[in-house]
Amino acid sequence: MIVCSFYAPIYYVFFCNPYIRTLYLTTISVFGVMAIVTLLSPSLSSSRFRSFRATLFLSMGFSGVVPAVHALVTHWEHPHVVVALGYELVMAILYATGAVFYVTRIPERWKPGAFDIAGHSHQIFHFFVVLGALAHTLATLQVMEFRRGSPTCAF
Image (cartoon, rainbow, N blue to C red):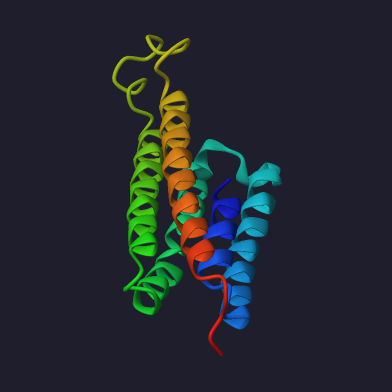
């Protein structure tokens, strides 16, 4: 989900710069492959590597900082891009908040057994991921509107 959330905004914002667009999309794709390998590796699935897995996901998410700053510098005069970056920042905060619950195992750490059915840290993590996906959807709609308003590239 994190990898796919990069594609539309980067594609539309850097539509007129195919080399940069390809670099950013390749980078996040490589992170995605690393995450898949990590998730499918039995040796890395133990609870001992929980922090490593969370760090990998956070690294994937935060790798969007460079393209975001680049988009802001390149398109600062376009309000759609600025608003989209605001939504993407909200998405990142929501993802990170969910990851904190996942890694710290709160609230079941405080009261073992009380959250086995509802309110488990993994459920809270997914709640924040869904909220992050909604924020991302709003950001994507903004960059699509930006591109619709400037359909041609000035080379």
